[in-house]
Length: 207
Image 1 (cartoon, rainbow, N blue to C red):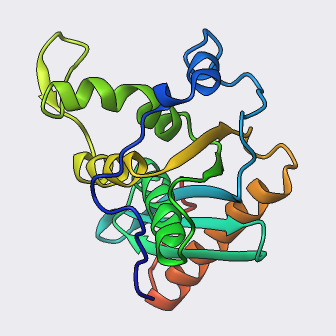
Image 2 (image 1 turned 180 degrees about the vertical axis):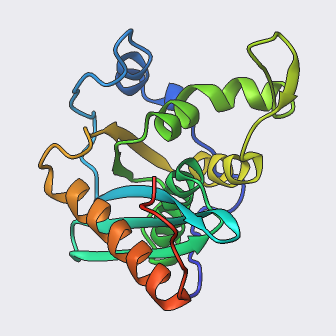
């Protein structure tokens, strides 16, 4: 599907543009529930997962990402080889925003993305601001500067997010939330099918 962009590459947005959102997400408890200033025109759920398989050739990572459109009731996703959990959480968010772009969802209207990944949510709301200023470098536990892990995915998500108004809302995993359960289950199904179709021999139970 052709990408529809009514605002061009110069359209940028920052959480600071919305004072209510900014004040709540930078609170001591970023997970605290709050009511957005504007109603979202689209609500998506995202999730990613990974399994470590013990095979005759050593450990093998199988991952999957998924997102759910609460309006169309459609669940999208894909399993990928050699993928970690964090990579799949990032990929789910990236594919969800690309889905919004490809379906012509206006970029000047608010959308909500629910996710259970603190890694992605805190990263896109807080960490990326520092990483951009430091040329995508961070300080490790030893006080040394090092490249941000999964930098290619973070850069892709940062660019996509900067062109949209997105409420990134936390939902506890495995809490019975319908949208979160759908994407979580779909990730599991996708990984099961990938392992079966690839004929991967597992020496013992996956971690």
